[in-house]
Length: 143
Image 1: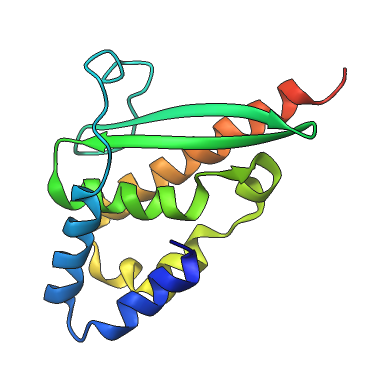
Image 2: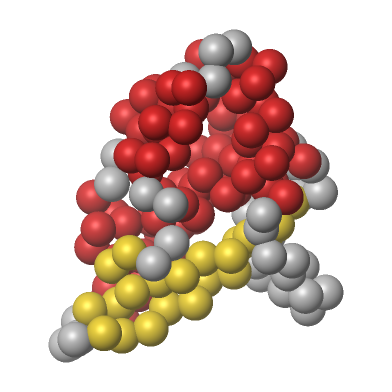
């Protein structure tokens, strides 16, 4: 599902109670992580809930493409992870670095409807994704 179709889906939901339910539904669609993937190395710092992100980079035409998978111990956060994955997973490292999550979250209305703690956690996930992309880009460029 593209970012545009996600924004369109949100626009059809009239109130924030419906949107929260939709976010939780998105989280239920996440593939589970293994016990080994629920590791300290995959844990995202800065989130009140426990959040794990698994990074799977691969090179295509000398461009790092990065797949992300994630999980949380909180239903709403699993949904936020699903949104972050839809924005970033499967993109080139360069695209990941250039995508403005704040603008997308504003279009979805997330900024005004999440608690400060949830917002901080959401942006911690974005920072982790962008850091992983920068690392993959640096590793792929000739020294």
